[in-house]
Image (cartoon, rainbow, N blue to C red):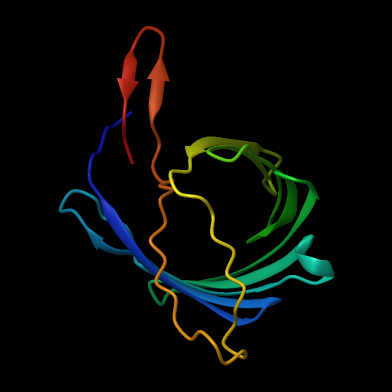
Length: 171
């Protein structure tokens, strides 16, 4: 295959409307390097957490370069402390996943079952340098209005490790 190196950047905004309802907006691939041509896109999403946050229902609208739009739906259930299972619809494909959070170390597996019968698998592992902060406020409550959160987890790109080929970091 062809190897292309470069970068893209995203920016997002998350608002907690109530303790159970979040609204998010993200612009993806807004700045790219010369050799990385990615179409810009935007997403507007909602997440609702009934039942004391053990279940999350989510949906978003994806707009790609003003040409196409897609809707995504999903559900996540926290079945035990640090263990979550997910399912959903990504465009026309069915998805499923599982996450294991061990504090400073987390693992995620996802599968996408395409309409043409293929199964696409994804796996990632991450390190969390700072503890996750529980945001106990919302816009409706009058105490806090703005939170600036610098997240320490970086999950993007695709690195390749081979016993014979070595380590190849990439996008």
